[in-house]
Image (cartoon, rainbow, N blue to C red; front, side):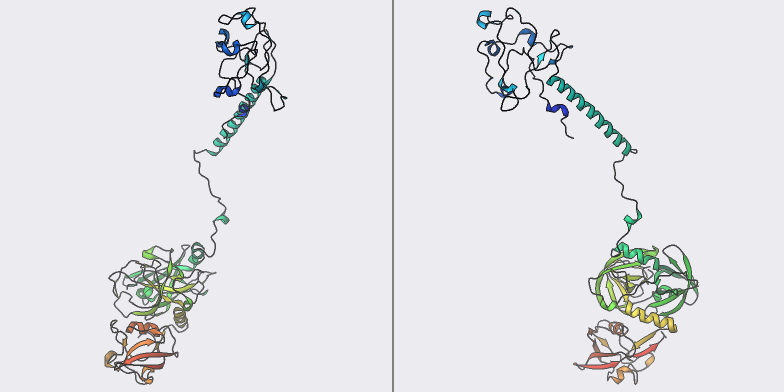
Length: 502
């Protein structure tokens, strides 16, 4: 366990019937209906003009349009007919030449009643002698011209719009630059982080012997008190220099008000605090549930103002952590989180989804780690001191400068494989393991007893028992379950107190 510092394609002309693909024939030689081009029988012809259906086209009708001519309107041709039929036709007698005026084909009327304008008639060659009439052909030309004009306008507008929007050749769409559009909702991680970051500081601790490191802290009150871990400031507590840098880059000198090694909590005071400090709001760690969202803020490996997220993975996790100096350890009944925590995160706030502080990030577990290991990385096992406990300690340190610990008045073995907290045969320096007239002695406990429960919490080792005791205050009454000579018994214990870390 390490805690190191951690478009539509058709145009307007499409509504006008197209010119027949075959060369035009004289208007007095009726053609088949439009359906005949799809294999349907030809339209009836005048009985006195059978050549129109049986004979080939006249030679002049088989030639393409001369360059100077264009299709005429769908009206009768006015040029005089030749006196004799053209070569290749039957005799005039057989053909009754010249033929009579043609019958109007059925498809030449618009509408079921035969009324309305004639449309769809085959186009004719324009005769130089014949008068030129304005009919559907002129309309078609006008429509085509209008379509071309409209197309030109549309093309010009399209080119203008494209040219206006493609100064750099980019077709991307820019989001609004309105700052209000970038505002994050208060309940989001970004919203919580934006509100909390101005109240979080990066602590630089430099000892007189050149040792030091980087950690994190946060504004506890408007007077300039900063809450952090003891192991973050331990190297510079007696002789050294402490500075606190805010997220805006402003740096302030700080001094130690008090520190509790056993709790791993320390309180600093900014020497010249700025006006308008905003303390982080404090939550209730007793109400935290496994699965609740968490947000950790700190300076992992010196990377200030880093925000990570996770959940509460477990509660009341017994943790013994060291400051890397080989000295006494700290014990806690910790909140476990999978938010990424690394060296340098120590002392930073663990927030809930509302942005309230529920713990102080203090320790991490790494593969093969042990107490005193100096470097480790996050593997999703981080531990935080519950804020309810940290607040009690902070108030004591601000008021008196020294911590106060609740105790049971008995020394227990720190072996974590005993299946409980075993009361030792003797205490430190050969003293009695159970203090005379202490809380444990008054409750009837004695050396060799194995404490298996503390209130409703199962105790599997000495560190677990200490961590649970330190979640209470001196004077609290607790129930202790223990085993003696294979028998289970309970005892009521009123917790005593110890001042200071000595």
